[in-house]
Image 1 (cartoon, one colour):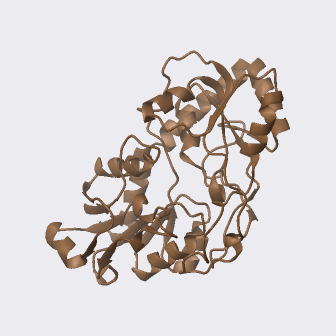
Image 2 (spheres, one colour):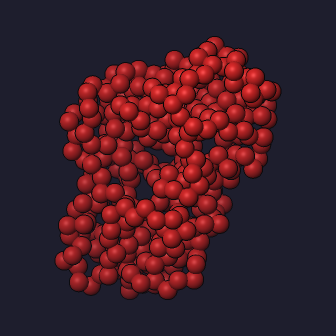
Length: 349
C-alpha cells in the first residue's frame, strides 16, 4: 500500500514525539511518503502529480493539532480534497480547548472515509460526523522506555502540566462544525488532582516526592527520569485522555504507575459539548491492581505510596505485569498494525 502521510510536525525528539512515533511505525510496515510543513495552499491534482500511485491519504496528528482558534487547516488548504477518489483517513488530535466542533466539522466536510482517535468517546464522534471512527490509543517505544539500570532516588515522581481546570464556559457552548465562540480559557480537565497533590505533598515527610512542572529536555533524558522513582504519578489529561505517560511508565519495567481512578469522565454530546458519563477509560487498556494502582484523593495516594514503599514484592509484581502487558499490547508497532488492519478491512487492500 502507498500512503501519503500529511504531517506538519514530526520532530523525533520533542515533547510531541508521538507525532513521529506512529508515522515511523506505519512506515516500517508499508510504503509511506510524507508531505511536511504548514501554511501552504495546493490542490489535489498537484499532489497526485508529485506523489503518483497513491492508495490512501492520511492526515497525521499534527494536522489536527490545536492551531489558531481551533484547527490547523485554517492556514493550510488542499483544494479538491473532498472530491478525490483516493480514500482519506484522519488521526484526530487534541479534542479539547473548544476545538472539537470545528475539527469534526472539517472531517465531515472533506468527506473522510475513516478516522481514528485516542479519546474514549469515538462512537459519539462517529454519530456526529457520519464518518466511521475507530479507537486508536496512545502507545510507547520499548527501545526508549526501558530499564536503564538506575537506582531509584525517589518514592514517587511527577513532571508535567498541572492542568487548566477553570474555563470560560466553552465546554457548554460548542456547535458542531464551528469554531469556538470567542477565545477559550482552560483546556478541559475534569479534575484538579495534580494541583491538589502539589499543594499537599510538602506535608508528607515520610515520602520522598519528586514534583516538577514540565521539563522539556530530550526524550532519552525524560525516559531515564522515569527510572528514578519507584512509583510514578500520572492522571488523565484534558477531556480525560489516557496519555502517553501511562504506557511509557509501564514499559520501564522499574516503576509502578499510580493514576486517578476511572469513574465519572469527560465525554461529549453530538454537538461537542461536555456530557460526563460513568465510563471506564482504562477498561480496554489495563486492569487496576494488576497493571496500575489507582486513587481518588491525595489522602488515598499518600496511603498507597506508603504501602508500596513497604511492600516491594507487591510493587514489583504489578510492575512486571504492566511491563509484559504493555510490551505485548501497547507499543507503536501494535498501533501501526491496528491502523493497517482497520484500513485493509475497510478498503479491501
